[in-house]
Image (cartoon, rainbow, N blue to C red):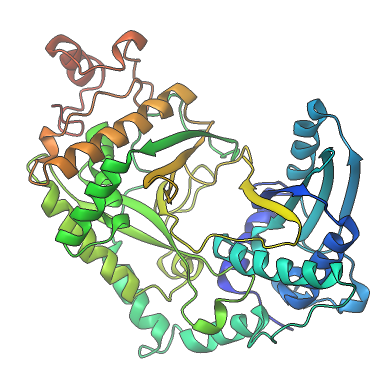
Length: 483
């Protein structure tokens, strides 16, 4: 039997524990303009499913241990539905019905497609990949291989591939061999786990956040999203600051986020999650599969800390995390055994991602093609800051995905505005102290705190309002320093 990778194991057990859901669906919308050969398109995706074994893999369980079973190409057919011509008013409903459907991982291949003709020369393909078989970095090789296969099928032939050097199942076996055994103190797993055990000792859970409602005992994973953008000038200043401090753009944003969280009452000892591609060998770059790993950034700061000091701490912690990135987050949880709860994500509840991966490009004859993400209506974390460079104008675009169990949309809109405001201030004055960063109070606090009047939420608090929040309402002045 072929074992699952550590990342796959966690999704498998979560799915078994929580039951069927669309939480781990990755939905994509491919928009085609031109003379689309629909038969060739379907054949191209079938070809890609044959090429990448992980896309024709189902998952079983024996004596409590999950395993993967790769289906023979001759016995598997890509789930595909052609809706035909659909009126514009029905298109959103069709998309929603497709993306909200769940996978039975024991029987369903983790990929399906639904094609809609929305105009005379416009088609929409709703593609859904289960996260157990793919991640964000998988989209580039997926798009490339679909393009190659479509060109071949339009020409009436099978695609001619350069054989993949490895398959995902090879990676799962290699991963276990590379990490070694936890009982071996010299193994890579033991050495890196020792770093994380020391780094994350005593992490408090969950991170205090300005919630609109008490945290439920079991997270529903229902979510929403709010757009966020930073100007071209701000991005230029962020990049200049990164160069000047030997850091990356991601590190600058991470440092700014820790300042924001501190100023919103999350305390002096903060943990923020971040995804890392996990493709540590060039042979993995051409594969569709679930390689992304998570690491934890722990930052300690105070009102007296300068932003430059915070950034340097983030830089050092991030570099150390990269050096110890091989331990899968799922294995880390098994080794560290943090307190587990169905109410929140372990070790961190806020995530920031800087999406500077190679963008997927579809090159298909006679067609203009774009690939667009589709909102899932789900949230894996309390707050997920998902940012990406917009090369069309040099700005930064993105969104904050949030748990609707915890936040109103209006609260997250204010958090987005405050994040932008923090970034603008720290890049303009890197020496500014954390306590001097101007961050108007968020409207609500956790644990039943009363709300700031809505009309006051968009401006700095005056002395009377500040006193009410810190002393009369919450008595948390030391944890919620004010401007």
